[in-house]
Image (tube, rainbow, N blue to C red; front, side, top):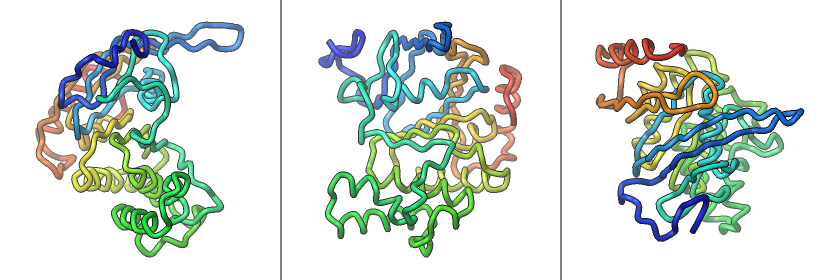
Length: 265
C-alpha cells in the first residue's frame, strides 16, 4: 500500500493525470490550536486539462495545491499522479507562486536554466532549452537582464519559463498574477493561455478571481468560502479559445458563479 490507502497497483483511468481522494489537512498553530484547512476533498484532473481552483482567501485552495506539489502531507486521504502516490516534490510537477521567487544574483537566462544546471544537463543542451522557453514567454533580448531590471509581469514570465524548462508533466500555479496591476494581469492571462495552447500539458491554476478563472479554465472547481475547505461546485467551461471577457456566455457564467460565492470579479 502507498500513501494512506493508495495502492500502487490501483488502476487509474487513462485520461486522469492527478487523483485526490478524501484529502483532509489540519494545521497546528501556536498554543496547539488545531485549524482544519481541508476536509474530504476528492478531485480528478485530466491529461492536458487546464483546471482552475477558485475560491476566496482562507478556503484551503493553496493548501490543496501544496499537497499536490508534495510540499504538504495530508492527514487523511491521498494525492497521486498517474504513475503512483505523491510523497514529496518531484520534477514531474513545476511550480509558479504569487511571489516571483527569482534568484536576484542570476540573469534571466541563469534563472531559467537553473533547474537544468542542478540536474547536470550538458551546457549546450540546457542553453538550447532555456532559450526556447525564454522565447516562448516573450523575453528574447532580455537574457542578460537581472530581476531588478524587470517589471512584475516580466519577472513572472521568467518564473513560468523556468518551470517549463524542467519539462514537468503538470504545471501548478498558485495565484501567479495576484501582485500585478489590472492591465498587466490581463496580458499575463492571455500569455499563459497562449503558452498552454503551444505546450499542451496539465495545468492546475489557483485564483480568487472569477473573470480570470473563466478566461483560462477548461473546468472550474469552486471552493467553499470558509474553513475547512471543501469543494462546493464544479463548472465546465465549454467556450472556444482565445476567449473574450465580454463574451455573453462567459458573462452569464460569471453571474452564476457570483451568485454562489463571495468572490471578486
